[in-house]
Image 1 (cartoon, rainbow, N blue to C red):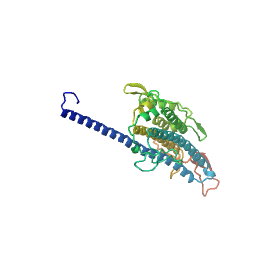
Image 2: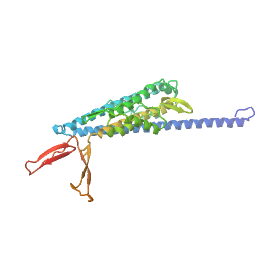
Image 3: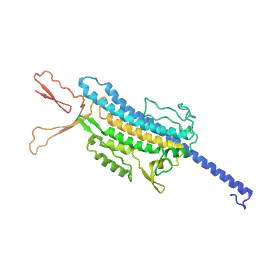
Length: 368
């Protein structure tokens, strides 16, 4: 475009094309950056939904306890509800630690990138921080507005903070992030599958799985690992333990543009603009909160929390006492639901000498 044989007019046209190309590139870049901001904003909203969903399960159990009369008849039920709330608190504590760590990493890369974090005002377009950490809601992420970030395309500083120098062997703060995220996964599975219930003790000790060829391979490995937990209550907990583990598992070493052995941290944060790194970190928080909600829902399911109070179902079948060979018979098959913590009481009116015994399973046997 600037060769010696070009006329001034051709040179001018060439310069105009160059400027136009640059402007188009800038527009595409801005559009892409704004898309990352939109993704991050939607992820933050989803995180609030997941947080509220988990809190709903805790509130349900607390309400159930509050509506249960604290007397000798309901002693076993109150003890179970207290035990479930204790487990829920432990799960919430683990989630809050992970949420706080990711929030602090977000703040670090924003500060290192020169962004202004001195103000906190909700719903103000020019302010990045829309909320501060809430001690009453420790597992709720800080609300951020990445549209207010000035250096949206900055990548050197955040990449150095999180990765370090080598995408295959990270040395930045992403190392602790990776380790603690995997520890959180294992800890949530352990808290969901290890407990004492009905006089029995169940123990689950998950091992780390971060190498797999495909999602099907991961599922096969996780199922094998969970099924090997012989001390766990796999009859009731197996599927939720598998779902929890798989939902938080990421492949450690990856093939990126023909380069093998790239760590997940390097793959995710290498040369990613500042707003994209924020979106990736918010996505990790979504994984944390989704696992929290799933684990809390499972614990809620172990106690009755509704208008109809039952937590056990027993199959029942009734038929004729005597049947001759070749006769047709009718069997009545049904399911009985009952509350194992509040066994039904049977009274017999207008019959002297009746005795009632309670063999369990929601039954009262009357001897006349």
